[in-house]
Image (cartoon, rainbow, N blue to C red; front, side, top):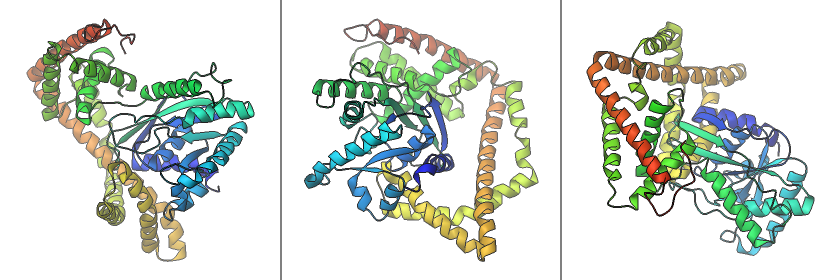
Length: 444
């Protein structure tokens, strides 16, 4: 388990290099027994993201077949993973799960953090899969066997495009699950296991994006952006809770086929498409979006076109373009499922980039310098190139907003009308006019 003490630090670095990674919401307790429960959209990259969000060593439960895999078995053992024997993988070894549970109970009793993915499988579906009961049984079993009732903390991964390098990835840490009323009932109480599993599911749904179909995502996120632009202009990131609310409203709306609100949905889609063609977002239509604020932001990036930054961007790109292309080529040839693509890129990239650094460095003295200098150059170059893209988008928006004031005013007025009608739709949903009963969920 030599890797476990540094797991959080290494995971944080890997997460922030591969993705534009952020941690939001509550904080994982820094000390004491914690059971981290997370969704599972991204294969072996998910433990990396959860460990980065936790900020402390985490021992993860992993299916036993991974330990026998020569490609990743070493990683499972060195990272302190605990094997789980599943019926579909090893039907004759199910009794070994008693050792698994004891190991987990011991870890929690000494105040460690344990991570588990209650869906049981990695997948690319638009919503949570049905949860297994393992997380609930572990929590109840720990309380019964050792008197230790761990804090159950949900962690939701919300990817922008999980297979794409440098896309946005959010880890949303939720409030701890309330289960003190169940802690004394033990893992043999089926009703307690069922209730706690449902509470864990509810907690995970509050920190994840759960859609009926992936095609709904642009609409759901667009509605949330319109809400932020008109009601909460200071917010920069979408609220997962409000995204979930919008998803619920849309799902109920679909069950009322003759509803007049369907026209509103079509109008919102049309408005978002029009903004997309212009390269604008709902927040760009705010009254202050096209003024001095945008100009100041653009001028604040002027240093990115200086000779040192240009040199770093070009040299960083040239230095790592070969291993980047080789990794991408091998992943394409392997053709993994969508939920495994980022894992393949990470696990293949480590030896490929390492071999490239060794090849470029040559001698032993140069190797030490290259091991530090080239990755640093690559990161600085990546940061500069992303800054260029952001500055170009800002400049384009600034020119459009300043030169087409009439169009912007028209779009802003239209957006305000849509926002007001969306508020009416939410009120109708809350009063039960989209279904047979009123809702308890208030506005975001």
